[in-house]
Length: 181
View 1: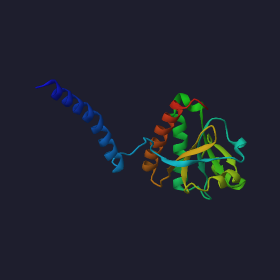
View 2: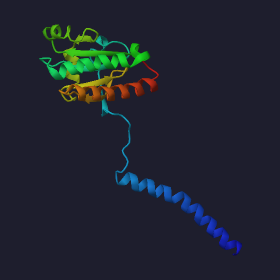
View 3: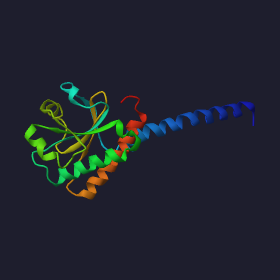
View 4: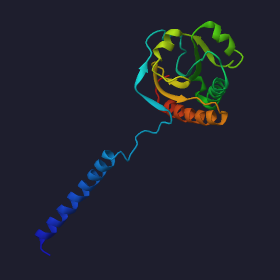
């Protein structure tokens, strides 16, 4: 084989070695065969930035829930899971505060016995800023007051505990990667 043919063959091999991965990546992305992201909750794009009455929120990260009119099974399960997530987060428990937001003070009295370790706030202004969120969801608020992820609540306690594991997994990642709060 002549040196010219060997050179051409080497150039073709180098060319193919660079082009084939690019074509494969383009094909995978254009056909939506790859799903980016590892979060278990629903990511808000763009995040909801809380601008009013944020001084009422505790420092650091919050695991939030908007209290319904009547705290029934789904609500009780959510409060239980929020408390369990706070305990399970371990050494980062001082960086996370579970928070229940109430529309008015009369609703807050019903929650004191259900969630004694959860911070309760009467903040209709914050609730109105969170109107984009679906009802009965647990959400994560970062130290810069951005709501970025939310999770559904469930009537079935086992499903809610499984959802709590999803919340815990995402919170662990966020707290590990975060340099604030």
